[in-house]
Each structure stands twice: as C-alpha cells, then as structure tokens.
Amino acid sequence: MVFVSGMKCKSCGVDTDGSFSQSQVKKYQADKSFEPTCKACNKANEEKAKWAGNFECSKCGRKRLVAAEFSQTQIQKKRLNPILLLTCIQCVKAAGPSKETEVDLEDGKEEAKEEVKTVEFSAGKLGLSIEKNAVNKEPSPESQAGQLGVKVGWVISHINGKQAPATKADILKEVAAQSEKGSKPVRFDFRVPCEGYHCCSQCGQMILGSFFTGAQLRNRGPGKQRCRKCVEQTEGESEREQQHSRFAKLEEARLAAKKASACGSVREQLIAASLECAVEAELVTGLKPMVLDEEGGEGQAEAKQVLLEAGGGSTSLGLPRTFSFNRTFCSGLWR
Image (tube, rainbow, N blue to C red):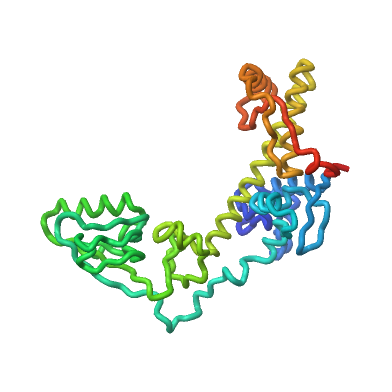
C-alpha cells in the first residue's frame, strides 16, 4: 500500500494510511494540486448517486437530493420549518467559515484584548468557582477571591510561575500540591479580558463578544463558551464522522442481508432485509425507524442473534422488530 504524505480527503479531511485508492494516490503524485477523495467518501457518493430524495440545495441548485447530502441539524430544522432553505454539505465546505465567524487574528493588534493580573492567595480556602481554567461564578464578597477583586471570566494562566493545567481537576491538584508545601501564599496569574472580549474555551483566544452566539455566552459562560468558528469546526468534524458511521452501518446491514439470503430461513431473511431497508431509508429521508412492537423483547433478541450469525460478529446496528416511516414525507423519494 502506497501512502503519500500530505494527502487529505477533500470531503472529510481524513489523511490516514490506506484511506485512498491506488488511482487517487497516482493522481496526487502526478499533480499535487489534485484534491483526492478517500474510499469511504467515494463509496458514499456512489450510493447517494443511486438515490433520489425530496430535498434541494439553495446554493448549488441541485434538486431531489437525499437527507445524507445535508447535516442532521439542517434536516431537523427543515422538519420543524418546511420553508427553510437548505445548504448541502458540499456547498458548506466549499464556502468555508462564514464571514461572521471568520476571526482575523491580525486585526486589532494595537487594541488590547486582555491584560495579566497577579493575585496572591494565603493558605486556606480560595473562594474560587472555576470551569475548566476560567472563573465561572462571581466570588462572594466574604471569600478570599472576592476580597482580592477576582472577577468572573478571568482565566488562570500560571500558578506560582508555572503554566497552569487546562482542566479544573488538574488545577485543583496543583493548588493542593502547592498548599502541602507550607503556609506560603499561592500566586495566580490571570488573563483578564478587556471590555467586550471573552475567552473561547476551545481555542483559548480572547475574542469579541460578537463572535459568540448569545446562547453560548448566556447558557454556557466562562470555561464552556466557544466562539462561532470553533463551534462550526467541531460540528463539521462531528457531521463527517456521523456520515461515515451511517454508511458503514448500511454496508454492515447489506452484508447481514446477503448472508441471511444465502443460508437463512424466510423469517431470518425478512428480519435482515427489513433492517437493511430501515438503514437505507434513514439516509434518504433523514427519519429514524419507529419501533411498532415494543412488547416483542423475545423477538428483538432473536433478531439480534440472526444478525450476529449472519454478520459473523458483533453489530452496532439498532434492532427494531418492525419499522414504519411517515408515508407522506417519504412519498416520491424513490424512483
């Protein structure tokens, strides 16, 4: 297996050895500007090309797309709001981060984003409530932290001149270790955001509040809040992983159906074929199968055994006994 350093799938970003076909490797070797596609994405694209759905991309104009062409979040929102305009995964990736989430780190160099304040705590309770490495609650006036002027949103950068750990548990261990050395004061260096700035818990940068959603600032707060750019990046990576996982389940279900068809009973064939149909239908419609007979505990156990035997090993697939999809929503989705 030949692997060329620098190869990266244009769809999912995977860059591991063995992820690309020989033809993709050869094309990349001949032209470094070539954008390869991994085996998993090629397989998924081939599958989606065979299907026809009821969705349309508002950017590229493609019609009769299946649910797998869009993020699960968009499909869920579309179900709640039928007039919502969708953007397919390809167009989202091609557009890159939206302008409102693009943070130019070079901008505002002359404008202070944060300052460093050093605070010395005496032995005993500090009165700090932290999440990750940030003060997430206003210290009470009676506590040490309150009397020393520590405020919510301050980020711990150093403890006694040593780089502070990035997690709450490790910071508490470090403080305990320093306290055990004697009754000497513990010195904290805090990154204090300037007015209008907040610290992103994922990238660690001090960023203007306009680059956070209101929900992130209100509901999550210091230590948990993430800027829009980090949220988009994380959601994109999660969506790609889920996409691969869903098509892997389809391959697994097809293998089980094929083996059941070759050597299983009629009942076993029906169970395996039903499961294959349910997994494929979810990729087309975005709707999960419904369990119609929840009393059938014994039947589900038998179905699981059939799939284990047919697949030759463990399976991560769901095992509903019978499936039902919304007929109105699904009508006209298959040619």
